[in-house]
Amino acid sequence: MSQKSFIFKRKAYERMLKWKNERKGETALLLQGARRIGKSTLAETFAAQEYQSYLLIDFSVAPSEVFDLFEDISDLNYVFFRLQLIYHKQLIERQSVVIFDEVQQCPKARQAIKHLVKDHRYDYIETGSLISVRKNSVDIVIPSEETKVDMFPMDYEEFKWAIGDNVTIPLLREAFIRRTPLGDKVHRRMMRDFRLYMIIGGMPQAVAKYIETNNLSEVDMVKRDIIALYEEDFNKIDETGRATAMFDAIPSLLNKNYARYPVAQAIPGEKVNRVTSLIKSMEDAMSVNVAYQAGDPNVGLALTRDNERFKLYVADTGLFITLAFKDKDFVDNEIYNKLLNDKLSANLGYVYENMIAQMLRATGKSLYYHIIPIDDGKKYYEVDFLLVEGHKVSPIEVKSSGYKTHASLDEFCRKYSDRIQNKYLLYTKDLQRIGDVNYVPVYMSMFI
Image (tube, rainbow, N blue to C red; front, side, top):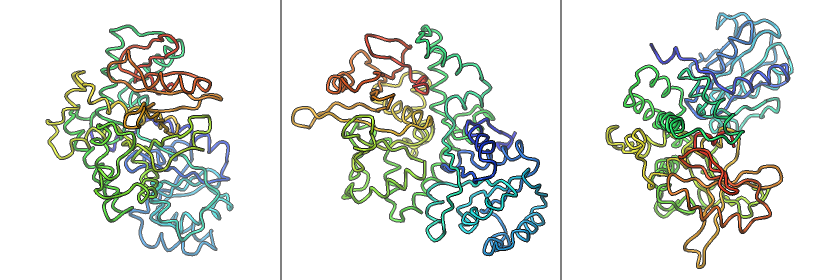
């Protein structure tokens, strides 16, 4: 069975359906995200299931005559006539969709969206990586007639769907809402299943390879290929290689538990104020997640965001684990072995921190953290993540072990006692509540 035969159920499909039913062709849909997360597959699957016919233009391989058509769109009848001839597809008014795949390769096609939407004959879906779309849109008029949908790696529920499990996540959600512990045996099984997700990750190609072969070594090879593609993209962002260096250093620097990403450790001699725009570009590429320090942890977290104090996470934890050992053979990857055998020690807890960052982003949350200096400032309390809930904030501390002590969470809640909504400690044991602290197993973090 080839990987191309796998069509995975994705949550973005429902957002696309909402766009189709509510906007009714008044806007194009721009499906954006990192490379290899399934944008093109989802767009074509949606088109095949929700329209009478569709026309797919893949600008990465389209012939020059297609590019030429978008140089002059004054006669749309002629443009549509030629496209139907070239692609041997019949378009039906208000019943067909045209897909501009890898639209960043043809900026003039994206610019044409304004006029195509106004014409209103067909619907339009664009796909592309955000960084490439922006980079190639400098000299064009950006259409305002776009509805943007962000795609992330497959979340835990999508992963479960992929391996044929439609039951577990709804039951876990119900247990979380009712605050019902699972019991030791069930919890251990849930952790074992979740560790497998951490190892494989949420990149569709990696998941497909696992389903096809049940061989983690082959899955690792797929992930290495994806990392190489990401590094290529970073080199396009910055030819000096700084972005690639910062990306490659994420696992080792996160392991050292710095209060912020130490740019000079990844790029000797570099200063953080010279890479803030580069960090923004990496974030736009959606292959990294960035958590910014909030100077004043209140409802408006973005208002006190410090752009020079941030932490970097790999957008997919499966890739993170492979990246941590990319210069070694698969069998030397101690994280694989320790995760599989439930022997992940405290000094590898940063793997869980990366996972929580991924799961929070998958639910649409922005990432913020907060530092409270101690005495001379050489030591500090750190709350890993902050969420806005209602009119207050909810701090999150991530623990892979030693959960009975949570000094950072306690100090944060003492200092900002009038702002606290909920207190969360995410860890590797069963769901429980002790005092006013919610102890939540990592696999339930998607419900927070």
